[in-house]
Image (cartoon, rainbow, N blue to C red; front, side, top):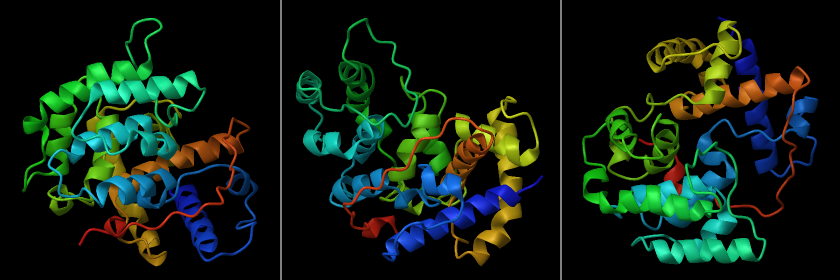
Length: 291
């Protein structure tokens, strides 16, 4: 196991964030890839979309029993501009949602931020938003009493329940929803708040790189979880040295994904370019580390 590049990426990416937050002028790093490329932050709540979701939807509605559905809509759309027009989507109104999205498409406005691969088995010509409303969001709304998190429930157990639904199978999107939802009660008090995570395609490749395996070598979820725990233990002293000793596993899982993107760029592969957004976002109080 060689965690040196993972620690390097975390160290330098967090340094960039801190320099930007302090108002320092660019460049914030001498690493040309990190300087030119678009990479998520080390802490997931520091990412721009996460901050918007937390500040606009989670903080004002932290006590809403069906916040899970709002977080699901947020992550399937993943674009603040669109979410702002949709508005907080509870109580759920599928006709209104589809109408807004259809109107946006008609005027050529963006409909989503394509951060995740969402496999939609929709009919030819069907608006993706209509598919999501009909096959994912509306069934969740109808099953809301079953899907509401309960006090004392672990993130892992809730993840299992959420992953039973259409569109959430495989667990990756369920994990993305929980990464936001866990900043509100009752999941904020979950016993596995720091240790729970679920793998995704990028973090599987990232873990392969750390372990010296072929990049696309397959994983079972159980094997990935076991090796991820070993890596987390190995880098913990470095995280503590960097002031990141409380980094939760979902953020570290994301770091593995970003490490893969970084290494792919170093090898001459594709890389999304960084385009700074001049408009700052407030830091949501609820995004502070759980106590």
